[in-house]
Image (cartoon, rainbow over all chains, first blue to last red; front, side, top):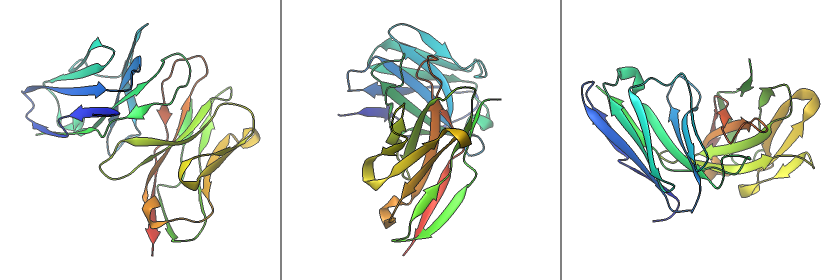
Length: 114
Length: 114
């Protein structure tokens, strides 16, 4: 595998389910990101993890919970989601968080909440 | 409020015609500026970026962008569009010294007529 991979590519879940999205980067980067892309709003940063710090968008509801066990893997744990959470969730990575390094994006997970 | 604006939601051009996609930002200082492209079912790919120096920036796939400080703009251009350029294009910024957090415009969907 090369670049940034995301699994699953598609996910349908009920509002009472618990599921997790997985992201893996094979680029040796030190920062990873979760973005949300919905039909009605611009791409929105949700969370950032780097060796030095974690940053989160304060508008993200607590039903989204990130986990970054190491610099290559990033998870987004989902529980009791709402239909408006249906979106494309994109993972990205970059060499550093401080600075404006290019971010490399995965193909995304298309999430549908029923 | 700080923002990135892409005034054109949809643009249709004929193959071989020239293209200009508009992007304006509103920040107190000049941010780092990016253009990304997203093909259907794909993640985002960086076309080009501007940090400082020459205000005309060359990117991949024959694209270029010009930074105009007086207009707070960073418009993307291509002299001759190919059918494979049909995609969604996103302008984005990173605020200097604020960490590598992209703020995106709403995107412009480009359609190419044969």
